[in-house]
Length: 294
Image (cartoon, rainbow, N blue to C red; front, side):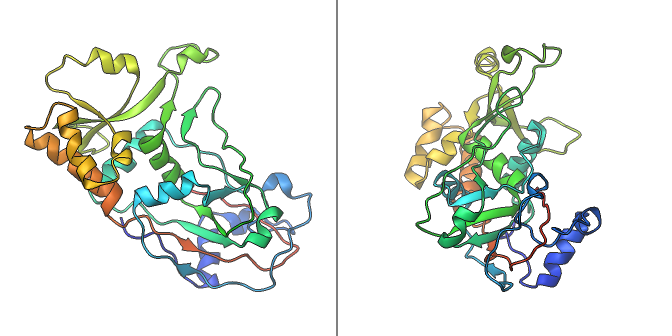
């Protein structure tokens, strides 16, 4: 996974939008401004500075550093974005990819100056997702004390990382009633420290699973499994904290388990694979358009 960056040219910005069908799908008089979503098109387009800004590349950052910005609402989601829609297997695949050192795409974002923050509506990233009653991003009240970065493309991946490393994912149990909250037990992401994934159609190498507390208890006596909570890696910010984790889970003398924890820690805290490209406020226009993010 390389640093998340995109071209500085506005031409490539247009190509990026065209590749997602926006140029053809939206012929409204609001189509050129990516600041207003479909539900807001009866409103006037926000007035922002009268120049296109050049897209810039920020220094690469680690996944942990990016999620700390999410925690502090320095990385936010503009109101134009769709909500989180990825399923649990997609979240698992992201973590399998980062542990294997695979690229998982780039992020596109734009910088909002303090004087323009009040013009727009922003949301925070989901941390604890529930398909029953917690599918909507929380509205955030952002003070205008410093610039913020709004994610235009990449929020599905960032939200997946946030859920896996800091939160939970509650989806419906198979054949359970869809109108009962008990059918959507809280699941957290775990990594089996003792073995790789068995052969699977998704081509996953690591045995990563969202497990309920009950499932975790049921497998506690299985000698082939030691389920490590992925969120513990995020909390272990320093190397000495990481080195304590194998002992904590009783696998300090197991070389494979120690390697598993090390690989995950390196992917989250050391590899600079989560840089963002920023865009200053878009030019004034009476035209606004929609956008989506992966």
